[in-house]
Length: 161
Image (cartoon, rainbow, N blue to C red; front, side, top):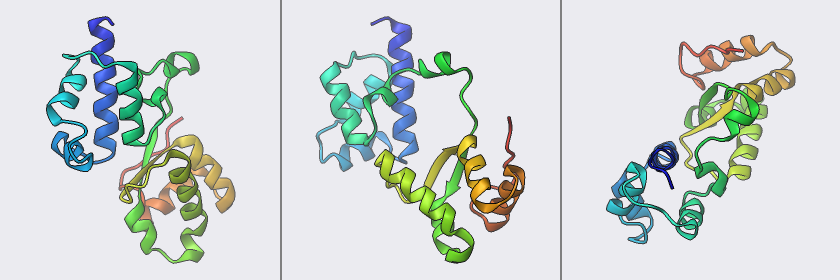
């Protein structure tokens, strides 16, 4: 494994851990000592090579497909990655069902598909928002504005092409 690849892999590992709101010590605690903070940190820095078996175990621990831990070859195959939007799941849960029902069902389906139940935020692609706009019978830009006004998306969120 080249040093550049090791650093890119480490960056992916760090990004997935951060998405789940875990510190290195949080990983150690959540895994009940299975994953030592110092070991995961050395993988993330690219100081220590990770075996395929360990990578698969770490992917299972994080609840993501192994491919999600690998450096992003997907972007080179598909072009630039689409912008991500962060939905506040806690705020979404506070909204009346008649307003947020379609978005809540969509978010639940994505969480189930990803095995991602952090319960705080959910990252979706701008393409997901465009699909939701069809359900809400709005333009994607109008739905973005609506979600910002509901407090589900952060103020200043803009949909870009």
